[in-house]
Image (cartoon, rainbow, N blue to C red; front, side, top):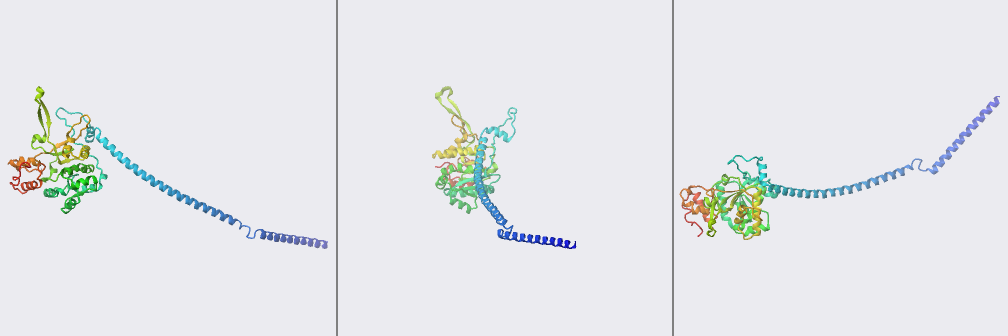
Amino acid sequence: MTGRREMHRNTLQSVRKARIGIAIAIGVTLGCLFAIFFPHGLFTSSTPILTRTISKSNAQVNSASCESSERINMLKSEFVEASEKNSELRKEIKELTEKLRLADQRKDNAQKQVLVLGKQQKAGPFGTVKGLRTSPAIIPDESVNPRLAKILEKVAVQRELIVALANSNVKDMLEVWFTNIKRVAIPNYLVVALDEEIAKFCESKDVPVYKRDPDAGIDSVARTGGNHAVSGLKFRILREFLQLGYSVLLSDVDIVYLQNPFHYLYRDSDVESMTDGHNNMTAYGYNDVFDEPAMGWARYAHTMRIWVYNSGFFYIRPTIPSIELLDRVASRLSQEPHSWDQAVFNEELFFPSYPGYDGLHAARRTMDFYLFMNSKVLFKTVRKDSNLSKLKPVIIHVNYHPDKLPRMKAVVEFYVKGNKDALKPFPDGSD
């Protein structure tokens, strides 16, 4: 029995050893096979795949980045183009809005004055009704001339000032003009220099001056033109002052200032002007009877007469009728080179509407001809009257006489220095 057991035990051990040997052989064989087929290891083959995947991903990112950059540049270009178009559209809208506003202001002007200045109302009792006389001022537009706008901000007082145009031909009269303005202590005045010499002259005398930007159409006249030619320019130049919202007392340089004119203005009309009239009738209007005997019973025709306003001294407010007046006069003078600016000024201001013509709807006022005196009134009447010669005018305009400078100096001698004989050497007229 014992021998059998030992024998069985030995057999089991032999089997176990054989199994272990087989297992070792199988392990060695498998190891060799793996070494042959997978020399870089079992998991290294995944690395190139991952690298390729990452590289591909990076390429896609780089490609997307390039496409994105190009897209951004394209969008920027489209944005700039759109901005430029938008700017142009805004400019067009602004211009159209301005045209619409001006059209609205022109349309039914009388009704709009009521809406602006007060509520509509019923007519009152007999003898108590008064119509509107003052047109509303326009909205200032500084974009018209920013440089001039800055000058006017410094010079003007309560948005009004005296303005004179001058070139080198009137240099001596200009000096008398601004010397007396300074003497009266009028702060709000400006010389529009029509050439470089006058600009430098005014600067040397500490006189407020404005030199316009070059304009071939205006400069040729401004440099060499005489009094009438230069006078015609003012209607074009004044327009900018009104568009900027300033009231202007337009003044020729053959005027002597004895008082501040702004203290004597009514400011209730579009245009307030001195007259070429020499008495109450001619200055303020009268009924002139025209006699035609051939008409028998109807031989007498009544006419209304008034002597013209002087286009060398008038106060003009920044209203639509005022600007329309300047446009009408400037337009006619450019088309009618032989026309006199004062005649055209009065025709546009006074002629009524009739078939084929729309008259200007502007309010006007005639200045007191003893305060705002022309040289005909002075030399023909005032200097010979002891009572009238005691009056002190606001200004003297030497408009009726060609010897302007000596008469201006004589006016200063008479009214400022008290020389009672200063006016005697001059004839009434120009002979």
